[in-house]
Image (cartoon, rainbow, N blue to C red; front, side, top):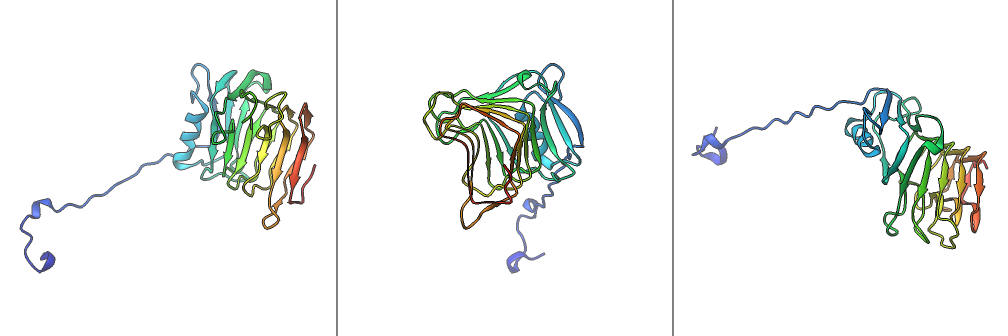
Length: 232
């Protein structure tokens, strides 16, 4: 060929590159986290395995007994749906057997487990607690359009004996997060047990709070605004 209307003086440097990306979708099934011989050593490893190519069926992560000191960020997962749900649960079904804990250092990392645009995720039968003292003790945060999630049967502990509003058991306050179910949990401490706020211009729909035990909160047990079809 004649690039630029003249013969190419160095044809040896002409290249064409083809990149083939091979990606394995996580098959539906039950996988283990933690403990000897588990499928994944940590929550982070399990989440990374899903975020690469998504999931192809309902997935259950059976978390082995122990204390997991880490922030757990769960983003949107490709393939998640009402059928292909994602569940993180204590392998024994006993919340005291699995503890997930983290000490926030400021407002930027003020959460233990964050559902960051995640949909169709269930957190079940675990103890999830902030190890902070004084302030910055949000435990579970829903953000960036986290919808159709279930928080069930957990023990959730914020900061005890606090008068600071940055301590909350379950928090959704800056984005529209809808059709989430919070049921059967014991939520202790914090300025609020549950804080769910939308805006007048973008109210939230279908959030359900039921059958929870709320203990030793400072200011409000449940603080909510701009909710439609909301059940408490």
